[in-house]
Structures are given as structure tokens and as C-alpha cells.
Length: 297
View 1 (cartoon, rainbow, N blue to C red):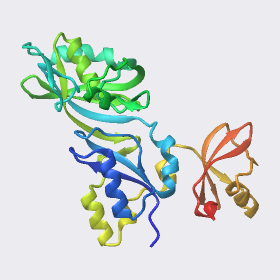
View 2 (view 1 turned 90 degrees about the vertical axis):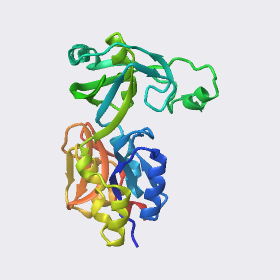
View 3 (view 1 turned 60 degrees about the horizontal axis):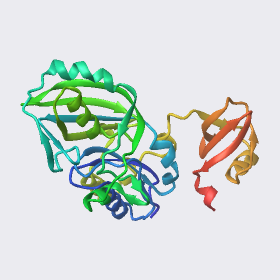
View 4 (view 1 turned 180 degrees about the vertical axis):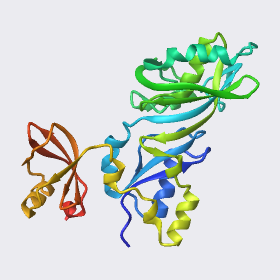
């Protein structure tokens, strides 16, 4: 049986790692050629994009897309992990108002610099930071720039607990934003809940639980849950090559072609058939990725 190729938007439940989800998808699809595009912390839930078969080559074109989250900030305690799974390191008695939160959110819009939490998957000398933190080893402070496209206050959920929505670039730590908001209002805080509602153009409405995917497989309809490779990168413009066997063959063999198109990256088609991705520079089309089965023959 041919394995459906493309991208699957999986609804990850809290308690599973992103790698656990990859393992489940490998079993369901019957292939080891599976990878996730952007990690979700074990305690978080929401949209996790999984690439299957040839679509794993699209990783770099999917992982860079905007992400959107709903997060709950719990004021009154800071933890070493900046979420509810860590050890409380500091407490505060102050009750924060909605007005105070709204007033500081503007500081977190645009390009900002974050201090990477010590409990993260980034590496220091080839070792993940969270492993060094658990061993009590000294960790160098790592800072990096991220972009928060939008951040807004939603509503109160309980005593000193509030929901916010964040639309941001890849690599953003939402728990760090929650921690930093706590400091900004003269309090302390951690992230008590996180839901990724969107990854690129793929939303919760597009996402399937692994249980639903198993059900679709039993019904022989697993392919219906898979986003075809070209649709997964539909934000890229389309380039139709002239309908000749030579053009198709040249592209699949990695040869350059002269085209009438502006510079940029394109989804390349010939006779309506998706061939892969190509880059145009000065009217010359160069192959970036071949995603047509004929390209592997």
C-alpha cells in the first residue's frame, strides 16, 4: 500500500512529547520517514505539524511560519521552568488587575529579545540545556531576538489568572513571555496553560487526534487527513512551466531552466502536475526540492 505523502496537522494532547506524536504517526502510517515541524512542550496542547515521506523535505519551508497561542498567566509564583510543571522559586501576594496587564502588553509587541529558559531544548556544548539544568550544571545565559506580531488580553479565568493570545515567530518561548509579564507588572508569574491554535495557515479546525487518524486508517480514508505537499506550502507563488516533456525532465533532473518570472521561491508545476520547489534569480529557475515521485526513480 502506498503511504500518503504530505503534512498532517495533529492535535497534540498535554502529557506527550512531540517525539511521542512522531512515534504514533510512524505506526499509523507504516513508515519511519516522519518528522515534526516545530516542537510543542510536553505540557502544551494544540496544532503540531507532522511531515510524512517526501514532505519531510519541506521542513525549512514550514517551520518558519507564524504560530498563534492561547496562554494562561498565573500570577503569584515563579517556577524554575516558567510553567506549572516546575519548582516554585519565588512567590508574591500582589493581586494583578486586567488594566495592569493590558498596560504592559505593548512592551511585548514587535521585535524583542528573550532570555532562553534554562529548561529548554537548546544546546550548550552539544548538551541540551534542560539536561544540564537537571544536573545542576552552570548554564550560560542565551538571549535571542524573536518577533511578536500580536499580543492581546482575552479575559480573566480565576483569581490572579488571565488568558492572553500571542501571534509570534518561531523560537518564541510563550512561558518566558508570561514570566516577563509578571516582572513587568511588579509581580511574579508562570504559564499555567498553553494551546497552540495555529501553525502557519493550519488551525485547530484542520487538526486530527491520533485516535481519529487510527479510525480513518481502519476506514481506508487516512489520505483524507493528509495535506498534499504543494498545499502545505500554498503561501508560495505558483509557477507553471511550459507544457513540454523536456521542461518536466530537466526540472526533475535538477537542470536550470529559463523562465519569465520574478525572483523568489515558487511551487513548480508542469501540465498541472506538482514537481517541487524552485528558486528564480534573474529569470533562471534552479531546483530547490524535487517532490514528485518520478524524481526518485
